[in-house]
Image (tube, rainbow, N blue to C red; front, side, top):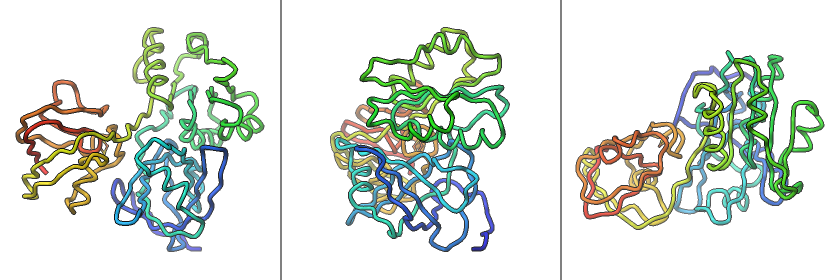
Length: 326
Ligand code: FES
C-alpha cells in the first residue's frame, strides 16, 4: 500500500471510502470504520477533529458531522461512533439501519474545531454520553507524547457506557466513570480546585453539561482560554420558508425538515460549510433584506450580528420575505 501525497484540505473536500467494519457497541451506539477506496493512506489528523459523512439516502443526501475517534497516528483506518437518535432527522438511523461493511461512501477531510492546547501542563476531560468520542483520539495522542491527562466520564447506565471497559482496563488510574442511574455525579468544584496551574479543561456532551462546566470554571476563576468545549447543534425542523438567493438568482423553499444549507445544496447552490452545526462560522451569510423573524441557533454570531447575518446550517426564518447574499 503506497502513501498518497498529503495536502491539507478542509471542509467540503471529500475522500472516497469503503466501510471496513460496523461494530454495534451497545443498544444505542455503533462504531463504523473506513478505509480509503483508492488504497492510499488517510491524512493524519489532530485529535478533536471531525469529519462530515455523506449518506446517499434514496434521492436525498444526508451530511452529518462525527468526531474522528481513532488514533490520529493510524492513517489506515478512520473510525467514528454513531449514537442512534430515534427522534432525530434520520442521519444516525440511516447509519445504523443501512450502512454495511463494503459500502462505498464519502467523508470530508478532517477539520478540527476542538483541538488540544498542547501548551497545557495537564488536560482534564469531561465527557457526557457519546461526547466521549473526541476524547478517545485525544487520549491516544497524549499517551504517545506522555502528556498528563485524566478523564471524568458520565454515562446513563452501565449498559450504555460506550468504551467504558476499554478505558478503565487500560487507564485505571486516569479514568473515572459516573453512572447517572446510581446517582453518581462529577464534583466539579472539587475537581477544578485540585488542578495544577496551567491545566486545561475540555468538555463534550449535552448542552446543559457544557454550560455547567463553563459557568463553574468561570466562577472558580479559570480563564476562558483554558476551558474548551465542542457543541454542534443539529438543525431543528420548523415551518417551511422561502428565501431569495441574490447571487444565484434563485428563489428556493426550505422544507420543514431540512436546513437552509441543505435546501441550497439540493438546488445545486455552492454553499460552504465545515461543521454543519452552528459552531465554525464557515457558512455565515449576509442578509440582504428581510421582513420577519429569525430563529438563530448558532454559537458563532454575536447577538448584535443576528439579523444582518444568518448561519444557514442551523438558523431558520419565519416571515414574509428573506433575501440573502448567496
Ligand atoms: S457550517 Fe459551521 S456554522 Fe454553519
